[in-house]
Image 1 (tube, rainbow, N blue to C red):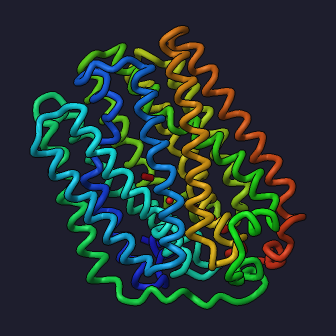
Image 2 (image 1 turned 90 degrees about the vertical axis):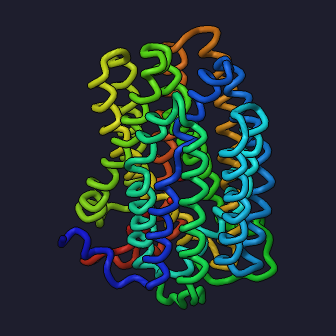
Length: 423
C-alpha cells in the first residue's frame, strides 16, 4: 500500500477524473479489435485498413484544433461532458444497426467528438495540479485508464465472433456512467495558482498565438519530432501486430490479441506504481529515451517470436514498460514549459501533428505490408522507433540549456521529474 501513498494529497477533482477514466475504459472494446473488424468482418486488405485509419485521422485533425480552442475558451469540464454525450448516442446507434460501413462511419463520428475533448482533459489535469504534483496527477490518470482496460480487450475478443454489437452497447453505457460522474462530482475547476521557479514558464500570455508560443520555445519542435515518430511507431501495436496475429492464427487471433491487449493493461496496473516510485528522480527526458528503447525491444521480440504465442506475452511485457516510461513523461513535459493560457491549443496542435505523421506512416506501412510482407514492414517500424530514440537523446542533452529554471531544485526530494495520458 505504500506504493499508492504517492498518489495521496492531490485535489479531489483529480480522483474523480481517475475514476471516470476507469469506468470509460471498462467499455473501450472497439478500437482494440478494429483492425480485425475491418479485415475479418468487412474484408478489407492491409492497404484499405491503412486508408481507413488515415481517413479517420484526417477527419479528426480539425476536431483536435477545435477542441484545443474550446478548452482555452470555455469551461473544460463541460466540453468533456458535451462531447461524451454525443459519443454515447453514436455508440448506442452502432449497437442497434447491422455491422457495416455505415456503423463504422458512425463509430468514427464518436471518435471525432471524443478527439475534441482530449485537449480539455489534458489541460484540466494540468490546471488541477501544481508543478511538483503534476507527474503524480498524470500518472494516476494513466493508471486509471489502464485499470479500466484490463478486461475490455479480452471481452471484446470473446464477443468478436457472434456478439460484436454488444461491445458497442457496453461502450456507450460505460461512457455514460463516466460522464455522469464527471458532470455531478467535479464542481471546482479553478486552476491551481502555482509559484516558484518551476512555474516560471507557465505564466499566462493572453492574446499570443500558438505559433508565437512555439517560436519562443523552439525545443518543442524537437520534442514534436521525437513524439510524432514515437506515436507513429507505437500505433503499429494495434495495426500491424493484430494483422500478423490474425494471419498466423486465423479467427483465434482476435482472442489471442485480446489477451495480449489485456496483459498490456495488467502490466501497466501492476508496474506503474513501482516505476513511478523507483524512477521518481529520473528526468522526464530520460524517461522518454528509456521508453523508446524498451518499445524497440518489445517490437523486436514480437518479430522474432511470431507464431509462438508465449513470445507475444514477453514482447508485450517489454513494450509496456516502454509505454509507461514514455507516457508518464510526455504530458507534464509540455505543460511545465508553456503558458497555462495555451494548454488546450498547444495540446490540440500537437495532437494534429501526431495524427498527420501517424497517418503518413500508416499509409506507408499498409502499402509495404501488402507488397513486401511482414518482415520489411517491421524493419521500417523498428527504424522509426530508433530515430525517435535518437531525437529523445538529443532532447535530453539540450533541455537543461533551454529551460534552466526547471533544473534549479535538484537537491533531494521529488525535484522536477514532470512526467506523464490513450486513448
